[in-house]
Image (cartoon, rainbow, N blue to C red; front, side, top):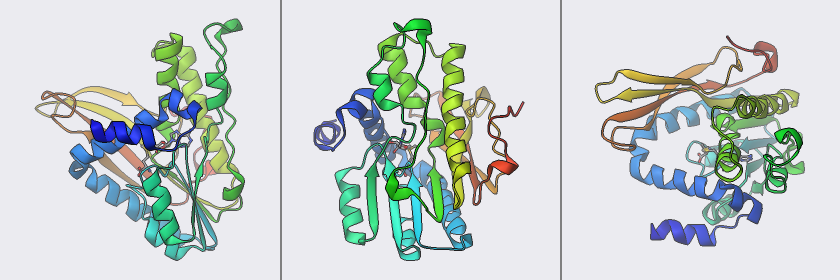
Length: 278
Ligand SMILES: C[S@@+](CC[C@H](N)C(=O)[O-])C[C@H]1O[C@@H](n2cnc3c(N)ncnc32)[C@H](O)[C@@H]1O
């Protein structure tokens, strides 16, 4: 608890991102990793392997960009910094430890950037009081440093993009999680991210969770969630299970398993992001 408070007070993070809850979420991820990281190891290894496979398939090795770099748990940063001349890390938060690690490697630049472009408009606008309860539109842009990347990696981020902003809207502006307008907005944020990836000239490596399953103690499925809200990604190169919350994390009766899909060379032509998969 004290460790988290220390990091909350000392991690460099803009006031807007702090207010939206990004820092709390990242520190939550760090704390969960400390508690149950052993259960995540296979998922982290699979993600790292897929990223390296994608990097090896890449025809040019000048610049690689990682979106959603976070704590770099699932990213083989040292190998990428050897394989590529330049590495760009994008996340809303770049912790002191990550910045320090980048300095040691020499060719890695951490960039603090909101890839949805939503943060400022969410803070500046009470969406429940404006006309028609309008939610801001996500306009995804890469920072200048990431332009012309030979490889761009969207790293266990896609379904997270709407997560923190939605929690902010529910907590601070009275939105309900089952509101169809909110769900449509979440879907549009993910579709916008896929469009951004699809527009890049470089190769695109995509790793994301696609389904959540809640199991009871005996392993029976009690609830399933489609995390992409109907968006279709096409056929994955690899798929695996990630025990996000094993027994004992929520309580002694339930566990949460995610299905994760990995694409070494994702392209919109095989997936049609704006189309429904059902
Ligand atoms: C599930 S974590 C990914 C794990 C991360 N790759 C790691 O190994 O630590 C999702 C990451 O996406 C970042 N993120 C969420 N929304 C973002 C946004 N709008 N722009 C940039 N990064 C974002 C979070 O800060 C977090 O680090």
